[in-house]
Length: 260
Ligand SMILES: NC(=O)c1ccc[n+]([C@@H]2O[C@H](COP(=O)([O-])OP(=O)(O)OC[C@H]3O[C@@H](n4cnc5c(N)ncnc54)[C@H](O)[C@@H]3O)[C@@H](O)[C@H]2O)c1
Image (cartoon, rainbow, N blue to C red; front, side):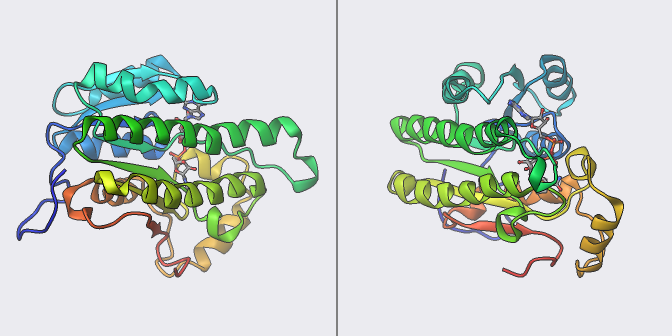
């Protein structure tokens, strides 16, 4: 990836022809993110649990060279082997966008050890093994790279509507990104985090009482939910040449709800 700025740049500058892993690519935000990268001319590895869903998303993307890839990221070995699989299928692995996550909303007293394990395995453990494998591969190839991880408003607020465990994992993602930014920076690899506020996807609405959401909207200056496309453009920016001097950052995309 190159450095510096030039007038008239496109949002996805530098991404044409790049190989991009998008985990959670069949999800609400993931689909929009895959599309933005495809529109920027990148080749996208659409990673999710369900093979048919990955195929459907990859098949609908503009451009060429996209590939579906089914993987269960609760298995750390599956997570760690993704970057090499991406390189094999796409020709290179230049960008990792890791969006796959699980949110099990429950009253605090009902959270079981199994709930803790599943959310922590996917949201935090997989993030470490996947991001490390991607950073190491990019370092070996010597061309720099971009890692974009996904946190949430929950990393800052501690979560709402029964999401304390999820919030703890997302807090871990922010710390992880900061540490990895320091580790891989000397190799020209940036590591950043997108922290969406409330975005209209099934993950947001599942198990959430409508009055809780109303309260969030009232506290949000823009008075509406975000769209997956609004998260996708923020993600594309962090992966592009435009963000060449940004690393270790957490990009708050919450419509003004959280001011940091
Ligand atoms: N929607 C929101 O309001 C919101 C807010 C803050 C943060 N986020 C974050 O944005 C990202 C995308 O969320 P979304 O709203 O699109 O949710 P979503 O549930 O629509 O998408 C998540 C995707 O991750 C996949 N996934 C889950 N477990 C997996 C596993 N073990 N292996 C492989 N894939 C797995 C799911 O199949 C799903 O397609 C997540 O990291 C989420 O935490 C979302």
